[in-house]
Length: 108
Image 1: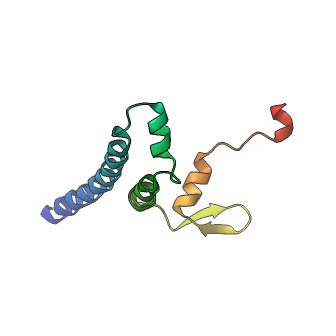
Image 2: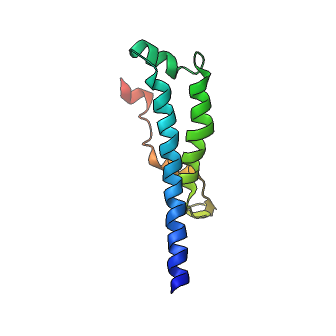
């Protein structure tokens, strides 16, 4: 029984670590924008051409942290009507979470 509780505790710590990584990344990005005094400066800090640091923060801290969070507990395969099963990936979760765009004709 103690081993099961120890395993559950480790799993909870691992999941907490995933959230801490996302939170730490968001804090770094917020800190990056904290140097701005007005909206123009914030816009400039958000443009990776003018401020490569923001791109670096997003690509090296936020994206990997979100990837790990979404991938955690993801089943290796999901059922597919045509092929029977297909590999799961964090990207398939993102695709399934986004509403399809309306066609260009319906926008008019």
